[in-house]
Each structure stands twice: as C-alpha cells, then as structure tokens.
Length: 88
Image 1 (cartoon, helix red, strand yellow):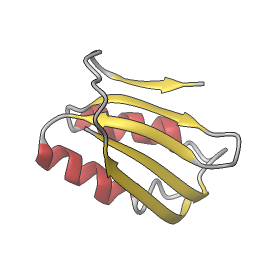
Image 2 (tube, rainbow, N blue to C red):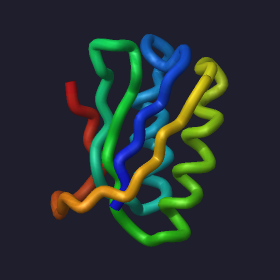
Image 3 (cartoon, rainbow, N blue to C red):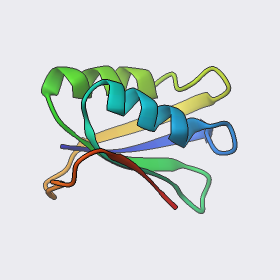
Image 4 (cartoon, one colour):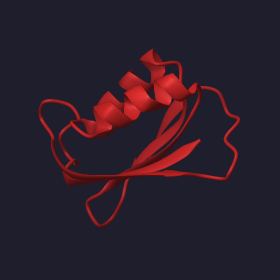
C-alpha cells in the first residue's frame, strides 16, 4: 500500500477522475482527494506491478495536467474497502 501526493497543475483538470479510472483499470483499491494547498493526494493498494504502473502514470497525469512533483511512499495503514474512491 502506498500514499501519494502530486504537485503542479493538478486541480480543476480532471486529475482525480482520471486517477480513479486508471487505478480501477489496474485493479487497485484506495482513494484520491484534492488538498487545500493545491495538491492531489491518495492511497493505493493492490498488486505490486499495478502499483508501479499507477506510480508511473501519476508522474505524468492526464493530458490536461502538469505534474511538477510526485511523492510516493509506503504506507502502513490498511485499506480493505473495494474500489477506488474520490474523496472530497
């Protein structure tokens, strides 16, 4: 399980929706959310290969975004809920 934080032009460009679509296609579970400071953050759990693919995708983001930095760190907390949620 990994916690991520993405900086850049990542809010107001469909980043959360695109992240959920990518994570769902990869069979991952977790969540993604906008932060008040302009970042997008989330938590992703699943198969290591799928997690690596999500990490690579987050470093670029959807075409409308401009990613300046990605922080990707192992998380100790558990996430057992199915699906990949957009949190507000």
